[in-house]
Image 1 (cartoon, rainbow, N blue to C red):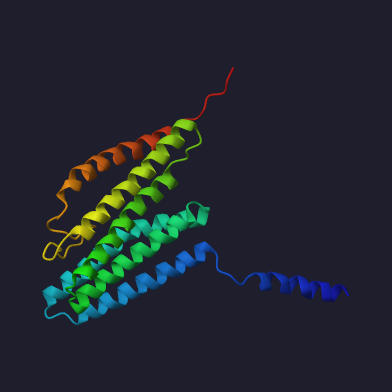
Image 2 (image 1 turned 180 degrees about the horizontal axis):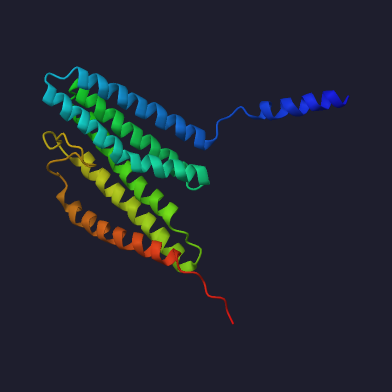
Length: 223
């Protein structure tokens, strides 16, 4: 009888271990997306017309991997700590989608406006996901002031991401250009949003570091 209980206790943890954790899902997203980008980038390098073109393609794909790598690192760290799990997964998907779409565009020489806009939007949200997740890891908003500054910085990042997305979507034919920057647009159709976006950038930077500083101030014990 004791042996039967022992066997049951060994089976129960295995039976309960059927679904993936959010961290494991994030790891799978990263491994798959980076694997695709690496494979496609390698094929593009080997398929290049000249040695100089091959170097440019390899360097460009690698730079973009490291650009999105910050988002990947912060996203996995937040998942490991159980912080902003939904946003972390979304940011990992955005970062993986951005690098994969870019690598495919280089290899297949894709020149499609909708495709390029999708790549740009993925880069935008990978970037602002990095801003939010990085602050979540760096700051510890325990006090009221730190919490309000943290929430304000997150709101500013979301607003900036929304404005940048609108700018990418509004760009017309001929205004989309090939670039490794988060927003692949040479000219903007809706230039009235440029000034508000610049203002939000300034506010975001101020709030980000203010929240970080305020989170480091420990509450003095009352005497």
